[in-house]
Image (cartoon, one colour):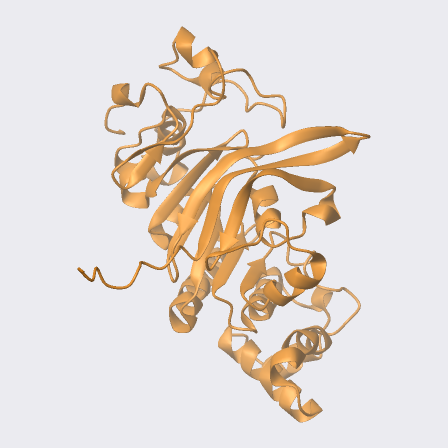
Length: 336
């Protein structure tokens, strides 16, 4: 009998044809995500990109078990974490996973912090489970957390309330809370929103340092391809609730196989020369849940044919290390 060695480990996070809907009435659901698909290995990094309304934030909520708080439900597909299904976990089971195994950094730092409690009080609640023991032990752990996220004068910050801190400092506190239990996966949803350019760079550098230091996988949501290119080895592109392309970031930047991925590339402001007029994506993004038949991008697509308008949203077709949901991907050239 030939021993082929140990079986390969499953991905840390696997999202398979996931669909999510808003509950808008008795027996009526408004779809917001349909056929979200990607895998993320342990200690890997994946960037999730797409225009506003593509379903990125709602997908993050599905991955941390907070859909019900926003009036949404999973109604198809599956999600697994470390090889175990988590699609239908109850709230008590999610509490054991959220924060402990999966850390989360939301878009708004104020939304993630209680405005009336001090930073020490809020971080103390996060670390009590792992530290236990005396008030001294908890205080020391909070102080170490603030130092780990490079907060100057951490003792003074502990006594502060969120409104007394800058946006950058608040975001560092949110990151401290997210990594307090040393999670295996950090999900960061537009973590630099509303921050100035210098602070954005500092926050992204911090996330990268902590990921390497703690051995975490990273799922980073951003509309900025330059950020994803710098931070993530893999990229998944979402349009109108569906994953339309996924693969190595370098490949999707240099030679996209889906017209939407190419359109995102050609509209990048960071690559524009002085005085150059950027190529914009024609038309408007489709409204949530009101998707056209066939490929959802066809009304805006420069290579669309009649067959793009027929049937359902195309499935992802895997070719080597990448996959694309375009039936005419053979007509895609190298990105400019």
